Each structure stands twice: as structure tokens, then as C-alpha cells.
Length: 294
Image (cartoon, rainbow, N blue to C red; front, side, top):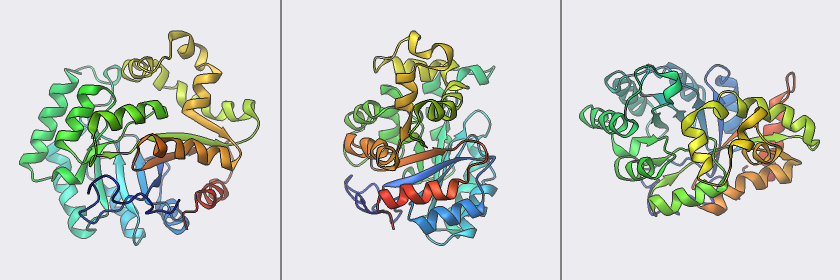
């Protein structure tokens, strides 16, 4: 499937000219750089997502945009507790003006364990989106990290769509049903290009376990789809890890990404995991070739 094979399938979520492509790459803010963004663009990926909690000045996003020509850069996510809307809004406008149709602001509330003053998630999100409205950040320029039904409804009403993290394809199907057509659904999916299950799980399990299998919002969401406390114990059951961090040969890894598209996603953010010391570029290249991105 080509980069733009699904462009426009959701009744205009990309009608403003921003083309995320069907597949993008999620990379933590601490390790993503201009070289990675240029490689992603060359290989045909549509978007680079800056993971973690990038700073509200959006300097890193600006660096990636300046180093590339076409690829979209998105935040996944700016944390509402760490960065006030009034701080990120001017940065958004700076990037939107300098790089039209190439920057997408992803925002979210993080999780209660990391925030002593954590209050009602819905109240927090509504207040933050209200502040972005007042600052002139358009609905089409932002997405919301939404997992549960109420957050998904808010994402559909107040933003371009949803960027769910650590979700199986079943959640993608439920999200599509919840938000309806014309709303962006862009889930993250971890993948490990490794055919040996034990070696693959040794790469994927630590990333899933810490911190996500110890955070209430992620566990609550996974329980909605049949996973239990037994699956969350001891670093995660093999079955859970194999779903949240798909592993195998390149065809299997690609199928793990397309499963979200088949479930209703417009765009899938692949978080490609590798063992220490492994060059990620050949892995990104193999996946891109399997997905026929070029």
C-alpha cells in the first residue's frame, strides 16, 4: 500500500492539505533527530511522531521540519500537565506558518501516577482544548491522545482525531466505531523485526512493561479488550507482549501494522524497536519496502 493509498478515505480529515500518509514512525524525543527524519522521508513514511513529552517550545519539531522537505512532523504527545496551552500555542503558530500543512500538534493528559496534582481527565482535556481555541489553534491542527469512550468522543468533537498509544487492533476498530467517519484515527504500534520469539520479547517486553503495565489508564484500557491482571504480571504475558510488540519476519511485522488499517485506522505510527547496537536504518528500509511506501 502506497504512502497515500488511504488519503482522503475519512471524508476529508486531510482535506486541508496535510497528508500524514498511511504509515509513520514514532520515535522518542530523546533519540529522534534530523538524520532519522530525513531517513523516514527518503523511505516514504508519511509522518514522524515525536514521542514522550516534547517541550512546549517545539524546537525539536522545528529542527526535524527544517531538515526535511515533505514529511509531516507530529507530537505524540505534548503533556497537558507539563506544558500550558498558552505556552505551546505560539509555538504551534510559528511552525504552522513556517511549514504549512506539515505540523500536527498531539496533546494528552499523561497518567495520574506521574502527576501529583492530577485531576479529572475529562475536565483537564476540555479546559486545555478551550485554551487552545482561545489561542487560535485550529481543530484541524491538533489531535488528542484518547483511549476510553469519553475521550474518543471529545477527540472527535474538538480535534482532528485521536492518537491512541499501546493499543491492539481491537481498540482501533472500537475507536473508529466511536468517532465515526471523517475523524483521524492514528494508533501507535510497536514492532520488532526478529523471528526468534524469545529474542524479540527480550526487546519488546521491557518497553511495554516499564512504565505502561504499571499505569492505571493503560491497564484499564487493555481490560476493556479482555486482558487480565495475569497478563500484566511479571513483565507481561507472552500473548500480551506479542500483540503490543508484534514480532517476526518483515511480512509478519508489516501485517501487524496493516491490521490497524484493516480495523479502521487512517494512519499507523510504527514504533520500531531494535536490540542494543542494531542499526535501525536497514530495519526501517525492510519494513518500508514490504509496505511498498516508495
